[in-house]
Length: 252
Ligand SMILES: [Zn+2]
Ligand SMILES: [Zn+2]
Ligand SMILES: [Zn+2]
Image (cartoon, rainbow, N blue to C red; front, side, top):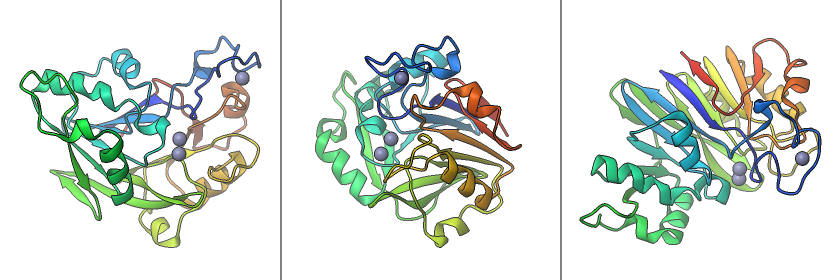
């Protein structure tokens, strides 16, 4: 099993349009962050979590040519607005691609992008997805997918556990019942927006505290704004905790 960090940025991406701060003008490629998303490869399957607005360039960059399923964390634009480009995979595979999320996310996405959820046209020239509401675990052979409810401020959304990897983006808090679903993780990927507090995201201090509580073998922070300079923060993190960057691959 391996994970490709397709994007590790917040909703505006880094650099942010019109910003001349040291991170936005940095020459370190790890300070260039497209919108947050990962690809998990397990047992020959390619699972995308969140088709964000940078998905097309991310898939080209990583040379991904096949997609078996899409998991949605929530319906915010920085997590779903690349949905149109899924049609490239429909076209290549001549298949409808299954798309999973919680009830609210699926209703929202199927309304906003209704044309993606109609029967495929004969030339596969538009996105063709089947929508599935997840209300419990899912299994594809040896890969087990567990939705993990978290709170993105007041909005309940899904994080996902895939075997011993968990992807928790866009959250501020989580109930104890979700902490129970995150025991014994090898890899934890966690929201870490910026230094200052935010009403709907973890800041650096909160992300470090939650990482310690969950206690995965390795933790990677993601969904970062231009407040965070890669080298500066990464060099000060405790052992076992690292900042992710676009293109980072993690093997299990
Ligand atoms: Zn987001
Ligand atoms: Zn900036
Ligand atoms: Zn969000």
